[in-house]
Length: 120
Image (cartoon, rainbow, N blue to C red; front, side, top):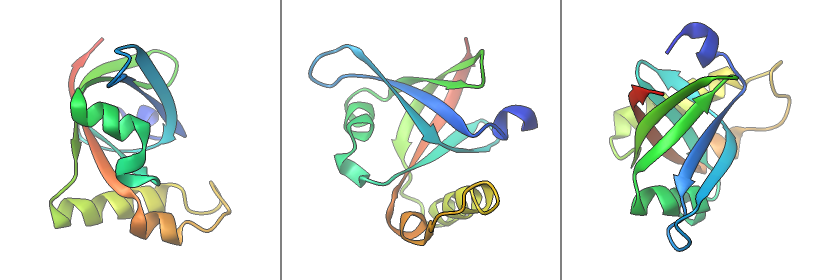
């Protein structure tokens, strides 16, 4: 992923509904490292996009106006990777980008990875 795309404020994750089978898209803060997009899910395993991605890990990620990627979702379970994800997102959204308190989100949210598989 290019630095320009990695600097965008949001990415868009499209999952397939685990019950309905229809596409669902969310807008969410993200961090990028190599060919992986990382997000922190504040609702942890209760977030709909997490539930959908666990059932059907093949998703689509859009960054910027036209950069679309196929991706494979996974919950980050490695403690070193988890720590890197949290640092990456907390540094990206630190002031002046965002002025609110991100401490709890940075500690408690669930780290989810989207390994990019193809450019669309």
